[in-house]
Image (cartoon, rainbow, N blue to C red):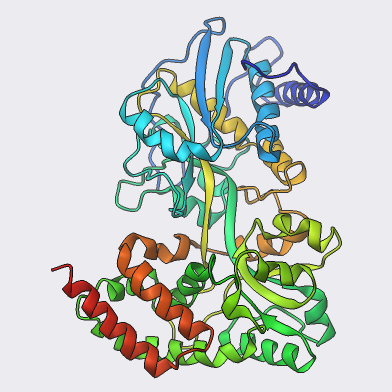
Length: 464
């Protein structure tokens, strides 16, 4: 890799491990034979893998592989990738990985570069449609199953090796099952809480239903704890996404927001949801209505508030305030008894590696992705970067341990804020402000439904 340091002890250990694995390969391979790749039976629903469109280069043929990274080289995940790249190059001496560490600026550059057919082989993109995500449906991706199905470093296929909800986020839904990338560094949105508070008031397990959630909040408040807060200027959108998905699914609420008449807000499920939200405002920490990021989440770290809906980056963001011994717990947003959504549906996504459809070396790029998805590199993401991994067999550590347990049972990845930002100004100008007033208790459920319905009708009338 150009501009990257020489091999470290970590790399040498990886190489020795790789050599040992080759030596202990299939029983029918004799020492005099060339090692052969394990042939895996395809899953019942999958067809035999197609041959790569480009033949693999000879062992000595030099290959330059261009990788655009969304990391900064000196940040923890970037350092994991540095070591992974060094190890990959050592195992493939004819390959030079040319890396550009764009950081988060990649989202402003990549789509244009792909359209201009710049020589890019592998690139980082966001799976899960965050508001800052690259639209992979529009970008130049290569359908990965065309290069083989068994590209994890075990008998598992990529589908089996990847956490189910994350695989859902990289499989194009309106296609023939195209896989547009391999997730390797996930994020999830869940309720983060102080386990010590729960234990102090006798809450034995995280709430799964809305009734259990309210009961837990009541017990916390009775014991003198402020149950819940949010930074309403920064994360009100995921609050809306969580409530509306549980009430009527993301697809359902998007139809409501796009209704020019506004009458869809009169749905009984939404009225019940509004009543539950207004009633829950009694359990919000004092001052929640005026929280500006990061004031609300900091109050959790300072032991002043018990719960906060946030992303899996929260414990790292709060580490200096909370200290390393803070007793974090995590659970999925609860179910409504009348709702169509589910707590197995989680706002989530991941950094994912994709191959440019114009790559001259898709087979080599594919081998690099296999390595980043390997057990060793994914374990380094957890242990060295203190970050989530995408594999089912690599548990998350420390404050994210509970998040892993909750997320591995999830079966659907939801877009950030349920995809409501895609509806445009009607969300930012109508839904967001009225929903905020409801959440903090400024208006009743009836006032919310009547005013948002009329405001939405007025909004769409001006767009006709």
